[in-house]
Length: 116
Image (cartoon, rainbow, N blue to C red):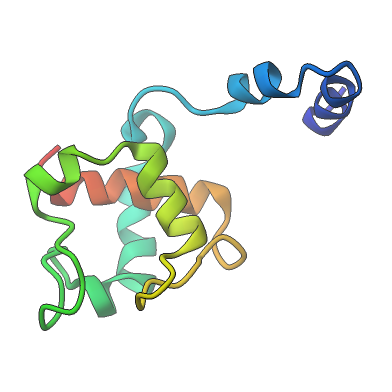
């Protein structure tokens, strides 16, 4: 049985919240994604705004290399920002452009920029 079938059954049984919670990735982005693959994704899609080292370009984007700022963000929060973008900013939504795997990989790579 595939994952969609399990989700359908969970929804029918009213167990969606606990079931979907099981699907949330725990642990760090490094466990969920591959930083080396994420670097390739970052260089192609993110570097233009966030810069080669994550420090931002021209002060218009937040620094992904700021260890204090990034420590306050969970991997899930970073993944959600990559997926859905940020309204009112120049941060686009990548959820329909990048695969889930690529988004987790870029989160893992972003963590390396902040020294984590």
